[in-house]
Image (tube, rainbow, N blue to C red; front, side, top):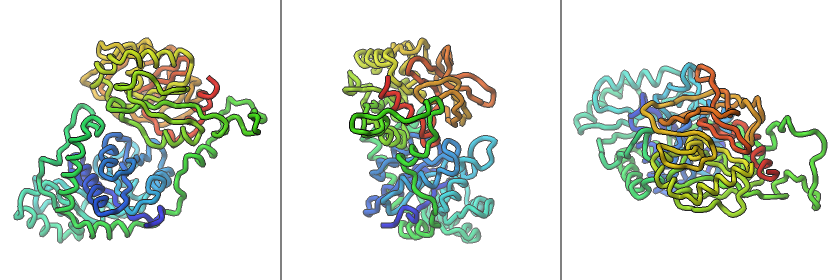
Length: 477
């Protein structure tokens, strides 16, 4: 087994979205795992859905690598954190290989992440409508940025043996090895809807079958030994792996906390020490709330919380002793009737918020806290209504906290991401959560009592003090 700094790794990229990155990356993860390798799965960008399929394929938590949300300096440390103990890592890219945050050059692109990880790239090419032209396409991607090492190609949606022969002949002139050829296969398709693939949690049995089909297609069509050899050629990383406890130790102190010694418990421990108390932080999960970065739970635990997951579709009460609540993203609009029907839990959430306990809600969590969603009663914590629309709101956001809350003090700057087809009216409360540049500036979200609710998805590894502040509020609220 390799050390994390030298773990063999591949980045799976493509010229454009829809080329087959998810099929190839997920299939490779499952195929490698079936050979007995410990596979570390990763996804470039803010996407929550693909990592669910990656986790199913590899048996390990799927993790995101986002240079916009977390900064380029955290990409390699977060990768090494996720890759601890792994034999090989597979990183699925985002969009086209050189596509990143709009107007920000290479920032958050697959190419940038590949360079930060010193990892070879395997380019997945949809060959369904081309033959000799594939050589020009691959040559262009391989030569565009000399710092990006395109180590090979996997041809997808190849129609026949004759088509394959033409493609291979053309690619000989490009000097890029072909590591696999995949035929068109309907059984590997995964259903989509308004925000992309349907999450694993909503179709687990079918997802297991889809991942098995991906693994078999990749096993049959790809040179797995050759790909492992390519992965072993990745350059060593010299940075240290990210660690939640160390990140919290390095986080800047809350500027509103009075200077001077912290209060001590009878046994002499700092009252903010993880050992002094362990407030229960409940995190919404289940099919309706599938969007969550693993580092959030790790930071909460490192800050001293006892993290407990519950399912708002099934559980009628919050976990015993809940002192704080985190409701992340997902698809409450798909489950609005079921969420509404669970009246005991809606009342429990409302009662908790009424006490002033910390509640952090992102996107789906925001909708759940509204008075109603598409006419269905929700928790009623916020005096707002939510509904589905045809318009897609999508993109990275620069944000600044405009008021003190359970998550941040006013003036805290964070980067986030929006991805939804819903609207909340009003879009901001009397006390807003964020001032957001989109590129126009607007106020967004709600802060009331201990509640911080917003459409903005953030990655707490970029600002670990968020988790520390939240847990401290759980202790004192």
